[in-house]
Image (cartoon, rainbow, N blue to C red; front, side, top):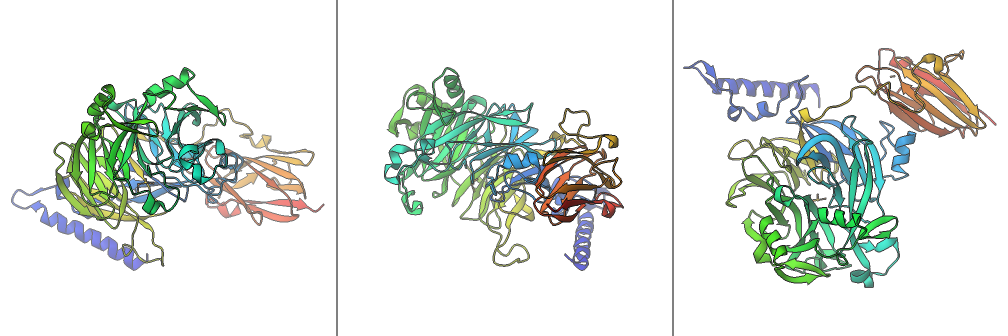
Length: 620
Ligand code: RUQ
Ligand code: CUA
């Protein structure tokens, strides 16, 4: 944007404010009306320089593999947090720890973030992520906004349904979109229905160590599992998954997976399954405890749902679950109470792949005619639901009690998910909602044949709903969660006293040690120099021999907020950042001789440009 535009933008906003002040000033009573209802749209979303947003929006970055953190209501992009893919700016995937975590993977496909919960509400401790591309789960620590653990999960194939967390973060579940033969074996597609399985994993977070482990897996029929949600309130202990391709088609799914009028919502009792697994009711597959609901019946049931349901969402009170049939004009609300009753009375209309199907009429509460292409639903604090209509390019507000549509708002265009303030918890907010749109078309300045995705900010505080802001987003916001900013407590500087390998705090302790052809550099980065060996004439130079392996263990000894240093090695294709008080290790093979400048890549002081050194590699 050029200065002229910025100026005219600012003038526009100021003019808007002025008009608003005049319009909303009641001159008779000389009192300014300041209620939120009367604010102009510009005022509602304006966060002045230096002021902070009320909410964090944590948005999945789809096939970028990363997490995007926005502030709301300003929609400013605050941070990109690398999760499943390398990130050269921060050196994620370059330094030892993150390189080991990524384990050679070049990309990930991050679909649905899940913030950890306590008693059904976000607690701001961690965010869990799932990778549809390479079957992984990640732990993002919300104190540092760093990915602290990545778990590679065997036996699964595209955990799209994930992640969804249980109300007290006992587990999060990763059901899969694709089915594959159990145990990663080759089996031809002619044997699909018998030999392929859709496996769901239960992952247990460890909040002490910021890490993850697989608790067990559940073997499900060879269908595609699409979205899921955990029960709460009276449905606590249960999970709900949507399915498609219950036809078990193995080719041209576009046609073949849309034959049946009904697919299913899978209800599974995770509390019971966890107990059964504890009692030893499992088989081991690839080192993981695999639970088979056919061998141990009574924990998995099917609920018929209209044609190819996509989203399934549990209401804040936990009394209902809502399935949106992407190929039907309705969204269907089911009663948890009726479902539990049907299970109790064995009120089944049949079975599929050995699993009992509850009688539709016994479980359905109502079918709501929301519009075309309903995908996902969120909630507010006033008993309303909000559903995206992919085909109609709208968000619809409807009343949970009566099922009546209250308002519809156009969005640009083709919304997939939507996210309201804490809108999937037991205690939703009720002021903002963001529609995460798949197509932007003409919405922003053109950048060629492919455009960014778009997000529309919707004010839901009144009776009717209104788009009041918009921002482009990077590929691809599958889902996002909005959390109250005061629930996030970040660390500003890494703890100096924590027990940490290879940290050097005292300049006198900096040194370069050689062990055969392994060289260890115990160094410091500080404003505005590198110290690799304080005793040397040139403390900022590292001299090694061609063929050596060099380990740079660097501690950033600056303990002031936001003084991050980077260390790039010119011509060696390496760069990583070290945040205040942090220690990181970078290992390189010194396989080419020559003189290579080292420089700080993160602007850190007036003498940042002077923060340099050399890596000298003597020829063999
Ligand atoms: S899905 S657009 Cu990957 Cu979340 Cu519904
Ligand atoms: Cu350190 Cu720039």
